[in-house]
Each structure stands twice: as C-alpha cells, then as structure tokens.
Image 1 (cartoon, rainbow, N blue to C red):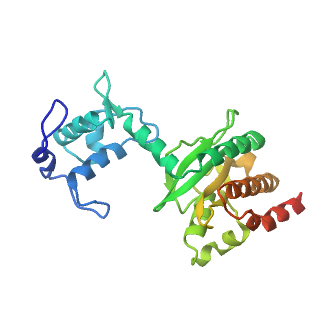
Image 2 (cartoon, rainbow, N blue to C red):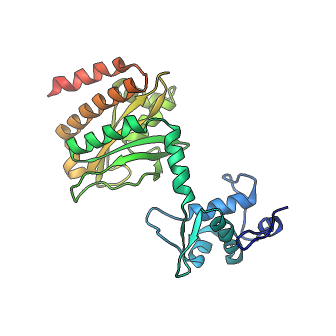
Image 3 (spheres, one colour):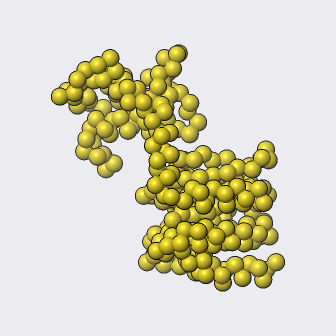
Length: 267
C-alpha cells in the first residue's frame, strides 16, 4: 500500500477510472502511468509552464485527476509548481536525459565534430537517433548567425521526413528497397520536407560492429543552404566527420572512402 503524504496519493485514488479515459494502441496497460506520462507529454517544445486547465484540456483528464497526478509528479521531481500556480517540468527529466545521452557513449566523439561542422559551415549541426517512428535530437550545435535552423536537444520529429530520417530508415530497415540509394551513397538530403523553409543533409555514423549509431546532420534556411554547391560542400564535410566518428567508435572508416572521393572530385 502506498502511504499518503503531503504530495503523494493513494493507489486507490490514482487507479479510479475516469469517464474521459479510453483505451488506445499506445496504452501501456497501466492506467496511472499512462496518465502521468500524458501530463509530461503535454508540455511542448515552447511550453515553459502550463495551467491546470490547459493540462486537463491537453490530456483529456478531469482536473481532479490531473491535480492528484501533478502532486505525485511534483513529489518525484518531474513537475514543479510555480509561484503563480502554473506547472512546469521539474529537474528529474534533465537528469534522466543526461543519463540517456551517456548511454550512447558517443558524446565525447560527436560533440566536438558538431562544433567544428557548425563553425566551418555556419549552419546548425545535429546528431539524431531513431526512437520508433520518430527521430530524436540527441546533440546539436547552432551557429551564431541570427537566421538559422533552431532545434532543441530531446525534440522528436517524424522519421519519414527530413534527411536524417532517410538515413536512419536506410540503415535500420536494410531490406527496404526505397533506401537502397541512400545506403549506397552514404548520404541523404531534403528540401522543405518537414519545414518548407529548411534544407538539410545527413550521413550515417557506425559503431565497432558496423551497426548504425545515428545520423550526423547539417541544416539551414533553404534559400541559403539549399543550393547544389552548398549541399555538396556540406555532404563532403559530413562524410569526413562521420568517418572520424566511426573510427573513434571502433568502426571501419574505409566504407566512406568512395563517397568522400566522389565529392572531392566535384570540387
């Protein structure tokens, strides 16, 4: 039995069915966890804080249910209540995000390369990993210029749009013939697929077993970054960086040589 404290709630209170709750394909089968996750997922990339009313609207939970869950999440450090009565994300997700990043064991290798790519090319450099049907920003470095592509670490985007999505699909669904060209070339580009004003190009990074680690990516405003010469320069730089990353992670850098040579001949 769960003890009731100032912030905690009883198991019976949490598990009481609500008329607004309906089963769906994404349900874990544990209603209280699904509801708690729904509250956390209600915060979007630009939401610093939300009211109880808005959280109730976004999750479909009654205010009474949402309030009890918010108390439990606040007690665990996942939610914090502001002085004006609104709610924001707590400190625990930041700690878990750091652990998640470390689990890939690529930060010391990838981050310096992103910094160099962004500095040399003047665009946003990022590293994506696949999470189901989404691609997640694991690391990113943005340039100092005022007009740039802005993304946040931890943001998720559909995997079927964007250059990094093509790379992630190509090397995690090796039997899919749609991505054979990407697998052969070791790079992909996109022009306005996710955002009509953005262009991007991406290449894969592999580990010591030859498995895909993630997608090294450059993106920028389409008017500036979308020209053939700019894309060629970006792909060439990405391929060299991906080779360095793969070698540093114990993989075979030679698999990039043909693609690197192709772009060297274009210059």
